[in-house]
Length: 156
Image (cartoon, rainbow, N blue to C red; front, side):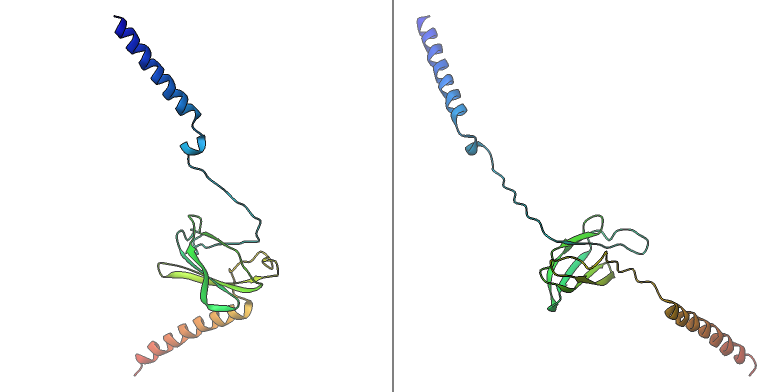
């Protein structure tokens, strides 16, 4: 019986030593570290949407700097809301191309010194009165021309 109690005491001492060793191990060795850095920038955020108002989620984006309109400086995809953020490095007019499934647009975004957009930029350019007049005239002329063509055809 004496050997049972001595063996139990020895085992308890080993468990106690193991617990002390684990507890004294530095937490750095037990966990992964993380490091976050932050800095303030003047970023430009675009938001792309279809004419229906539905966001262009996961659309391909290419951003071109003013000094090299052939090579994209930034590329990526829009988020679920159709947004994409980039940081212009020089002032000038930056071109942003957004494409998805055969649809897309290109916007020229003026950037001032310090990376600030000249104003709240929107690429929704409506037709002015002259352009509307030309479109209305072209539609009218097309309708009249078609009517005259088919009207004359029956008299021959």
